[in-house]
Length: 221
Image 1 (cartoon, helix red, strand yellow):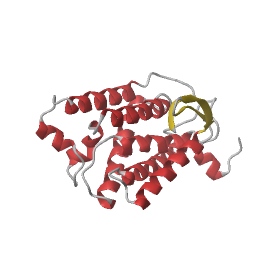
Image 2 (cartoon, helix red, strand yellow):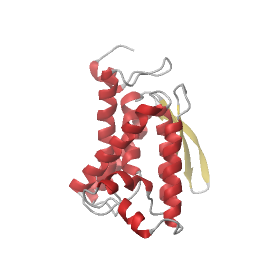
Image 3 (cartoon, one colour):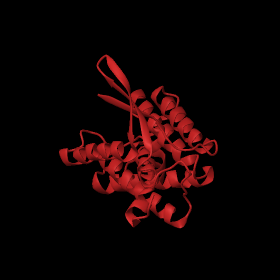
Image 4 (tube, helix red, strand yellow):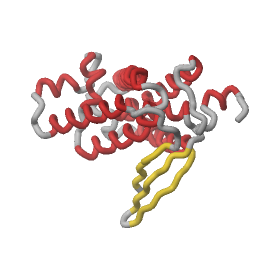
C-alpha cells in the first residue's frame, strides 16, 4: 500500500517561499545530475561520503532516481510548508540546514556508506511537525493495487508508523537505504522543535492542538 500525505491541518500565515526554494533547488540539481547536465566532479562532491562539508550539506540536492526525488519532495512540500508558514522563512532555512547536518552526521557515524538524498533532512522537518503538531490531523492519499482513497489521522500516528518502519530498517540491515539518516533526522527534528517551542521561536496558531512540549509538561488543552 502506498500512503502519500497531502495536507496538514493548520493555518497558513505567510507564503513559505523558503521551502519552495528548497524544493526547487533539490529538484533542479537532482534532475540536472540525472540527465547529465551536472559535471561529474561536482555531483561526486555533493555525495555524503565522510566528513566533507560539501557532502554533509549538499547531499540533499542529489537523488538516485526520479521516484526517489518525487517522494522526498512531496513530503518536504507538505511538512515543510506547514512549518515554514507558521515560523518564518528566515528561521526555517537554518533549521533545515541544521536537520540536514545532524541527519548526515548520524549516518556517517553509524553507517558510513556513501549516500545522497534529502530523506534525512525531510525526516528532520517531520520531527519538527511531531513536536509542534502531534494532534493536528494529516490528510493522506492511499493506493492499493487499483483502488485508492483518502483518510485523515493525527500526525503522531503517521509519523510513529514511519519511525517504526525506519527503526526496523536499521535493525534489519538497511537494504541500501540510509535508515540511520532517517532516524537521526527525525529525532534531531523533534529535539529542535521542542527547543524552539521552549524558547518561543516556534509558536502554535489558534487552530492548533497542544504541542508535544505542552503534552510532556502536562499543560491543559
